[in-house]
Amino acid sequence: MPTLKDIQQQFQSLAKLNVQKKPNRAVATGKLRDSIRAIQTRTNKAGGAIFDLKTVYYGVFVEMGTRNMKARPFAQEAADSDTLKAMVDDYFKAEVQLTLMAGVKSMDSRLKKYTK
Image (cartoon, rainbow, N blue to C red; front, side, top):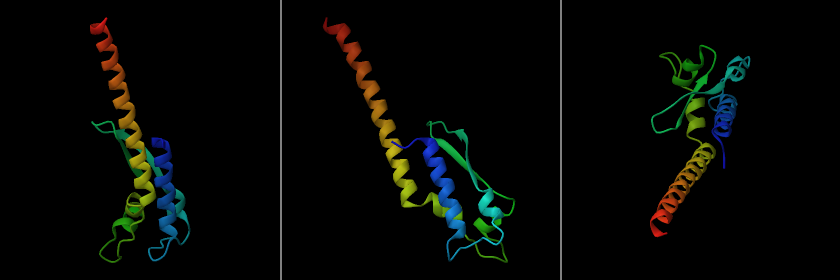
């Protein structure tokens, strides 16, 4: 089962690869690529992790584009990758299974009280 740390590292790695891939290649000096950091910033109400991608200041312009430059979305492509989606699916399946098993054990212990 992948951990949140594994997902975070995969997201960061994929974003770095996407900056270098054609046709969206955005590497001249390597500063943007080297600055990409995926960090867990907070947890939402459902307990899921929220990741933020930190880059040099112009990373957002490369990702979103400007009126003078078309977008070269490296982070969105990383988030949409089949690899990352599969890792997230595996993580949540395992979390749901653990939660269900904890619930079954809890119900089992309560039932034992009443059947004695």
